[in-house]
Amino acid sequence: MATLRSRRFYETLEAGELAVASSVFYNFSTDAKTADEVPFNNILIRNFSLQRIKVSYNDTIAIIGANEIYSDDSAYGLRNLTVENTSTTDANSDIIFIQISRVVTSNAAIIADVTGQNIYDVANGAV
Image (cartoon, rainbow, N blue to C red; front, side):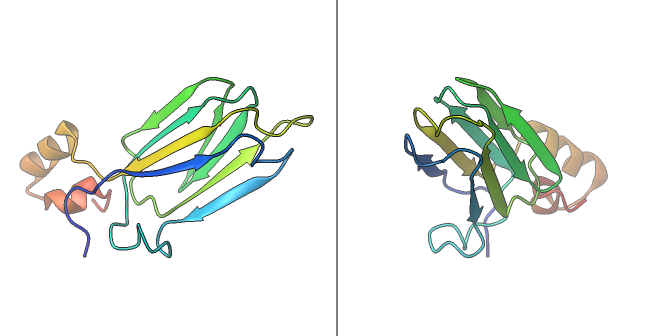
């Protein structure tokens, strides 16, 4: 059973690992190191490469430009993630760093307090 907060988990796509127009899929529910902690609600992606990438999870699609940072602390129910290289000419030129975790934000605490809902359910987007 997952706890209210989780450790931070990291994935790194090395330079050249994401070929032109290819993608990589992470299923955190079946990965041995993360399976006991799902679902997550916080994601940070740092695209050090010169290629634009597309990130998809839950009902979210984000386009992350070269050398940009993407962060979402409301990624409720995050269980899997797809990272796609949208470039038509080059594989990723540098690393793409991914960090996932489950955190309790001040907004979640306020919502739980005001509504009387369980903080775990609020932090996971169940209510």
